Length: 116
Length: 114
Image (cartoon, rainbow over all chains, first blue to last red; front, side):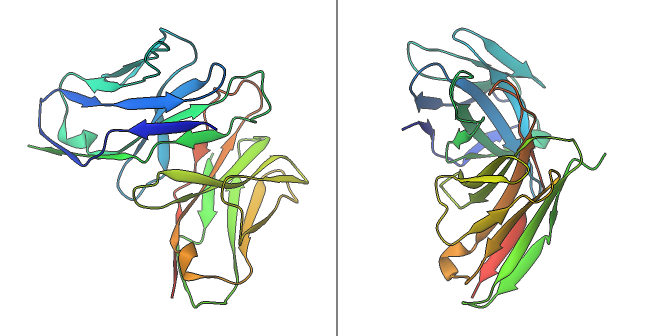
């Protein structure tokens, strides 16, 4: 079955530091890949997505590239802010041609704390 | 446009008690999902629905039942709560179409079973 593995956290950085959160996946076919973010006390929000190999998703200074050859979708940001403190989830959805009905398989989440 | 709302936000149950969690969405989405979130395990799919009157099992369905009598509502029931069901429950909805359409999440319900 499908699975998503994220780097273990928590991750603690100083403001303006570079961020990388690793994500690798196992899936049949050609899944779509997502990063969701959960701010304290809130539900999950879509941060970015990529639907095919070599696609780069980007939003709010965050980027991730769909690497089929390494089955990875690592999240990066060049300069983090205190407001980026949150839990980040990598997720995949099976290819559109299947009958998965858009079900998401999530990684375990990575807690990011950014200090001033 | 409230998006996805969940009721209640918090609840404490005793073992063996029953309760229903309500999820409502005003985006006219066909697909709805119930997840549970546990520390170190991400979100796991409990049940989902692809339309009014239809439901299906997800990854961890045991101990839960669901109903989708109206398109905008998706109910999650616990008939006899157990401490293992202590968790944060999230509802989500998504429009039909390609699988990369975004899922929209509610704010969650924190359930404690004593």
